[in-house]
Length: 260
Length: 260
DNA sequence: CCCGGATGAAGTGTCGACACTTCAAGCAGA
DNA sequence: TCTGCTTGAAGTGTCGACACTTCATCCGGG
Image 1: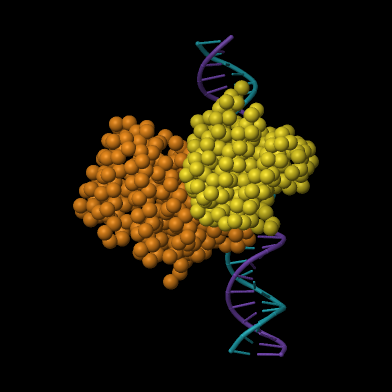
Image 2: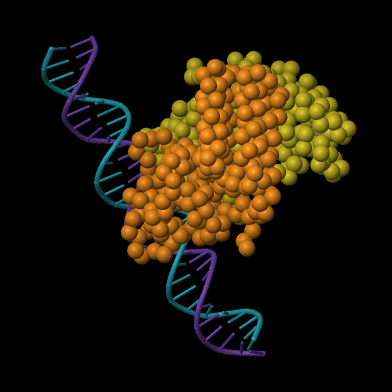
């Protein structure tokens, strides 16, 4: 999409100039796009230009090619995407609601800064909400649901065995998504999607910390067992522990969100 | 604002045509506007036209002058507000993110339908989140914070004594807001604001059920006591009970969200 | 050498226009 | 009477333009 929409852009040395060239592991790339699309696409078969721009810019931010504080003026963006400023503004508004962009009236939008304080809040909330999710999963999960989770678990083990952090990361995201789906609670799901997307970059950073995969994998196994045993309290506690371990890893990594 | 922006509107018999005439209790009106503004205004001293439209339309929806399914086409809205369609579309997008409006590509936006199922989800989530809030309040509330809450409690008692449901309702909203503020957690606050706004109309319906004020007042008193005693578990349980009682009242009222 | 106002370039918010899509009414045929 | 096609009116998504604001740079007075 990005490739199709903003290929030449010879005129503008904006932050998005070399988007298409940056290639990644295809699997991770696809998963990533899917994850981000769910929040930004309006499920339509023909996404509006605005949707595509929101998706593309969000991806840039999450993958770190756009840094906090970077200028996101609508003129340059419009040039990059060969569109007018109207859909760009629309995209920026959506990104603002999701917390990716800071818009001050009459001033240029900027990529939002994510302070450690906010990250803590984000993870706290995620911990609480996933704790609710886990309790609900225990109550309502069918055998088929559990089998899906077992599949993810096996994939986690395989990725961990290969030491493939990237794959582990994305399967982990899927695991969490499946849990959320099992609750069949659209409201909860939407809030989690929003928080999860915002935290996506951090989550990767977190799992990439040395020695994180082993305990995470172990806890997932125990969580799955708790689901099978219909042990709500244990499941809830394990989930909280998993999320909070994620935050702890970020803190340990020395990440602060400040400029160097 | 509405009054200033859309006074004559002789041409369009749109749903917003008689907005300014509808007068309410001034206090309630002011409180309501404040509540809604917090989510929709971008804190600026000079709100953009889009902000004003979002605020006005959200108010119409919450106060029930716009009903689920009502047409919100941007042409009529633009006429109503004497603006072009650009700020209208912006406002509609914001309202969509908040769940007030359903936008399908290439089709006319409509006022979102709120099914009983979603209301249940909404209240469930609010119950869980306010439970977190209560636990946090127990941990971090200063004496000044508690005093503010006591003030609200006294106002609740006064309103209940007068049998003034409207006033009770708005003080109740303030009480919840104060609790949320005490946590000093902006992320949590934002999510709660969003959910709370969506539920605003229902909350009023809920408290207006006969025999609701007494138990609610009683539980608030006990909640305050739990805060003073720093009893996290009790406070959390009471809060959950309060919110869930709200949902129960809605169910009992026979409200379904369906058209008659 | 520093401060503060002037000045031009750049960007924002809003507008009206236009091509394309959706919707509803009317009409023809069974 | 009902069905399905045609057709015009109405609405959406996007565009380029314009007035006003913000920002950076330059310049002259201290």
